[in-house]
Length: 62
Length: 172
Image 1 (cartoon, rainbow over the protein chains, first blue to last red):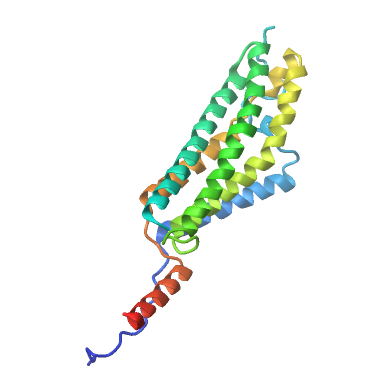
Image 2: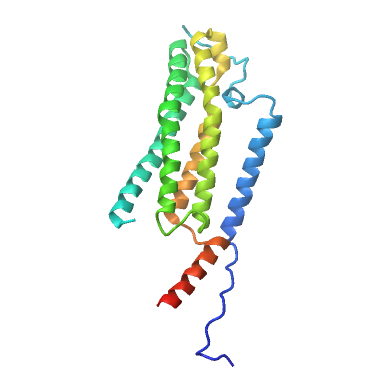
């Protein structure tokens, strides 16, 4: 039986919340994608991410 | 840190962080006009304005937001590594700053190119939507984390809390 005058023992460390695990996985995947693009993407910049290809059919007027 | 000083620092931090979001929205609007614009003058002005907003609004606001965030975390009971929401905010803010600083020279290069490009080259130049788009999502996530402050103490924060409780019992 527990002695009520006894000092309480150390509390157990709380478990990691689920949102932390989900966020952690998303951030790690994002960083890996970013590093992968930098290393193996074969060039990087705004032009790669546009909806118009370099040979766009868009007509530009003077 | 006195409550008055903490409130003042929080006001500065919020202003800079929300200003960063606003500047990214303005950049996105210009990026869309660079993609959809149909005359040379509009495209050239859009690229030049994206470069100016990037270097003179987004970059200073991003760096200042990171700096004031560090000051807020270290100057309050939240700490920098005690709570997961603070830790994630720090990691995401640092990542956003790194990507921004790596990306801006390319924006300057394309803005310069746009000033001399002919109509065909300008049509192929497109805009810059992915970086600011993803950046905006990251900034909104940070804002949500900072507003809701979800539960979760890191192992370091938990050990600090235990130590402070023990100290409190000894002193009290």
